[in-house]
Image (tube, one colour):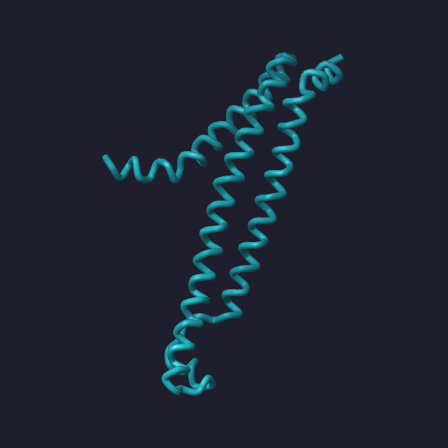
Length: 146
């Protein structure tokens, strides 16, 4: 029972965001099909909330992955420094069983940057559309159906 409550807070923002995005999309389509301008405008607020929750959740995941990569690099630097203090030549360190490849870690950083950029651009798009719908949705839908 306690395990459920331990896992739930970590996933809660994602679950709520997915539910909110689904409600936003379904409500927007429904309000357009029924030409209900007030309902269309109000569903924009749900889209904004979903965008904020998605951004918060994904940003946290990217930051945790970045921290893991930094910790691996710092650990490797610490091991190398310790071995160098013992008198082992720097050119002999790779043959001593060190596992972190710095170029591989840099590729990991670039992958995280690219992923963050994709998530950020999608979030900006959703946030912009939902905010405009929330602010001007009734005027836009009245203009579109007339």
